[in-house]
Length: 499
Image (cartoon, rainbow, N blue to C red):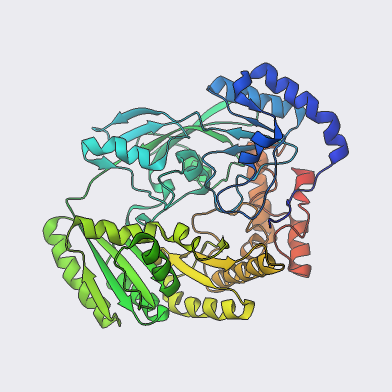
């Protein structure tokens, strides 16, 4: 079972427009760069985990910047929506195609154009895989810090569009903290560069604005990223707890003590069991929760911090603390966490991945309330998240073939996001809003704030053709949401009539 499309469309007008769009694109692109047949378009109908499915009108896969410009100019001239797509690993429906629009794939823009070890930077195309940068930089003792769990497949353009993070974002920041400049194409096909390879640039910080913009302001064509030297020493500790709430409180205690780990991750009991069965990381399967804490830096510093963290975790209620004996055991501890999402897929036909952030001091309370909500909705939940910065990733387990379970999962997920806002957090940490969380934007932001977002959208994309219907709900939609409190596709997207 899949959710219906959230798009509100005019099929009669579209029937007249479609042949013109395809004819213009065929004139601008090589034959192999245009996907028209339905069976081939199916590969692009959804992103990584979204319940939505939608066929694009046509898929354009350009080879050159000039071809990208031609696609955008064509769409601008004809008033056709454009959705840019990277590796398709988005987790919020951010790359969901428009049924009357062009899906613009940047898959062939996959080259590392420059790697400068002395200046510690790499200039890359948007289709370069996240992990490929670190692999290329390893020979120089360097790496690229952001490391989302999908780093083996996700691409830099998508990382920028969603402002991706990863397990080491607590100490080394999100994508926005590790990108120096971005070159993008506007909806008219013009080329613009924002940011600089210098420490600071004059004018407004448009580079930060591009991060998390979800493809609504421009199409990313190139980025310069910051490389960091590999730490001299790393150590990983694994702490077991007899309750998820106790583990959550231990996180707050570590940060309050002035410890800033390279990574601080948490998994609850169901996540531990699923990951252990899948990866055999050596996790304590009788624990209600575990924390994985990585420390890095100089050797003496890491040795001292390891002893201190060990003591703090035990004082916070840990029933067991393990210090990795060697590099292999460190890798196993992380392997289970990195594989938690696919591991959950082995224990449930479907799961609905949420992404919200809360102040760390509320971790224990929020985990308890999520468990209570799960019982109310009759659904299991697996909790895996970046504990250090309070970024939650509850995986709600359901069976899409059982009538009503998808709707229950959506309602459960919406309540989690509302709880995050209630506790002073946000409805997204690194997965973006897309279409999955657009209703909850009505809770996060007021009318004036959302209108400011639309003003920015109009400044970059006056006709509203870049990834329409995503991320920012209209005032009308929020009014309907407040009155009906419905989720995911049950209210048409009135913003598509405007954008």
